[in-house]
Length: 280
Image (cartoon, rainbow, N blue to C red; front, top):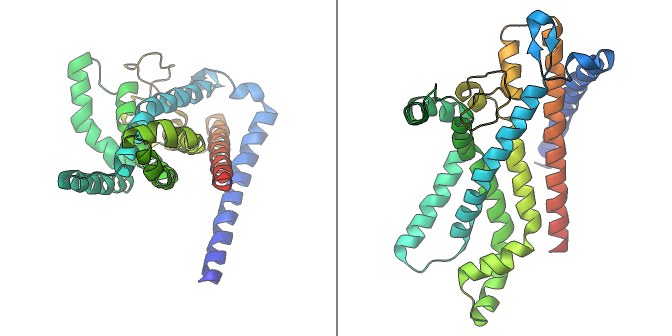
């Protein structure tokens, strides 16, 4: 088993390194040869303008907006899963909620987007006008996608501190939610930051939800009802129609930026969590 695990690790690391080399090599080559080709806000192939900054900023806007909704919800669900309950119905609800969160993490994102096309988009169209495919639709659905990742990480990081502080806090007359709010959460800042960063990376790199629910308009989203195009969806759209040329070369810069941002977020979150595990 140890040999298999070592072999699997080597294969995975080799694949990741190869991905970095190929996409990073072509991306850096494109940037070095003509930095003005992609580092601006205008994407218009007919005018030989291949700027990707609009899509990059839209991806950041979508990711931050999603986390503003999903992170408080994930923290609330985590607290409910961790804090003990005395009633039979409460225990049943906790068990079903934990199963539901884990089941949500196993659903492909394309199914979330496909379901939203028939349930959420018509509702937004009737309520606010327009096509219903906009930033708000992406935020609503993407929040459910990143939720399981954050809940599982928060639960694993906060459950042990809560169990350690539960009885001493009870002896001091503190209720469970007070223990969680004033003792456990302040001590678990590293876990909170790590969960936020991993959730952000999950939202930043998602393709199908933004591709199917955003209308893919080449404008900066300044309102929740605005259409938008993000970096990952842009790559999917262009590769479906281009295989050579400047537009295709510009996609390597987009892929390079996606890899760099997600890698930095993952390493930063892992470093924070590793440091927190050492101190505890």
